[in-house]
Length: 283
Length: 276
Image (cartoon, rainbow over all chains, first blue to last red; front, side):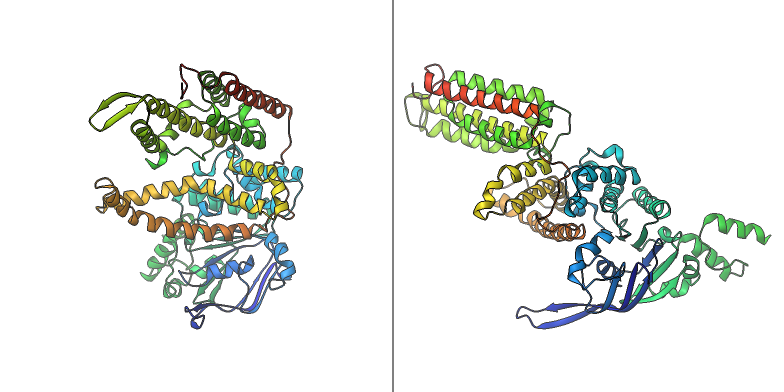
């Protein structure tokens, strides 16, 4: 069993009217099976309302399953005694950088998590220092988060999670509100963490360019996992992705179009360099 | 306009006052506010001004930055000034038709404006030099005895620190919404008071909605980071009195003593007193 495993996981949002009667049940997750091994870089794709954020919230026990089971590091998330352990094991970064920074100073915010789990003062300082250096934000440790750019705020949020020494970091559309520069900063930080620290990364996004380096990609639609595989395998199926309202990276799309026109180029080209090489081989 | 509010903001700097224990600063601000209301003569005013000036100089926050905060209360200042000036009964010095300005009225006006200005300056020194977290830490430890009366000290302190952190964010957002509404023809400038207040509705509704959303997001983010109330929490920056804190306490008590002494000894003097 991997670090995160879902078995027939279901989640329903129940809407009630004023008298408390159920008037609408929305199935956000529908029999999801998932197994993620330690140290992997996982990407979860899906358009709005596909259930990807709901899935993420299950990994951190912000939600608990309506049916089925979710295991994080071998612990059942419906076991209330393990709640705080699981939240420590699987840290979570959210979409809006402003709404997840609690303290008015960068270093104090990074220290918030360790404070909550009762880490001794001296150790908190060591962890904060370490976490800030991992996201390259040491320079800003005494700054107010309000004065940072979106990408920097998101890196602070990541540092806040790292300081709790998690085995998994779940990022729920961390770049959705950022400009291209901020987006690159955040993605580079995540990739570095995954490679150097061997933290399992679960990146939820709808930007295709961000996931070309992932080990495995899951595509979700209507609460189900509909595709899974390496980025190359996923991006080879341009038409299938389109049916789930997802786009492939521009380079992949270009290669796909060229192939349709009869050029001898394989499906699932991921980078500019790769396409260039293929094109040179043609002549 | 809205960006001018400096109350509740932190100004990072390395100074003696920045380094002080937040409990000292809280008590200091409290004593200063008390002293603002007990002074009633020129000597007391001089001591108060000297003390405030000393704090402003040692805290290294530019005076311009602090004075900017006064702009937010300008309206209140003018209003209290006008009311005091025209509505205080006493010996008349100037009168024209229904306007009647009295000696006591002038004194009252000067006193009130000084009091309000000093009040804001004094308390903004505290917030400008203390991070919201440390401020609430100070409150939490300083008021720990209230727990005995079942008062949720930690929860209130946490709420305050979050409120302080979100003030600038919400102000920025209000600014943004205002501009967006103005771009679509909303009018926040003209009309009487009631019309102006009515015009604020399209600003307040989206602001309120977004504040709720933010609150929900933040609560989730805090829970995700294992926030579980005050029990079992450790501190990154535990409060511990240093030598400079004891010195500051000493200065504070000397200051308070001096203020009380001027009041007892000099009473209201003739030059600047209210009821001469």
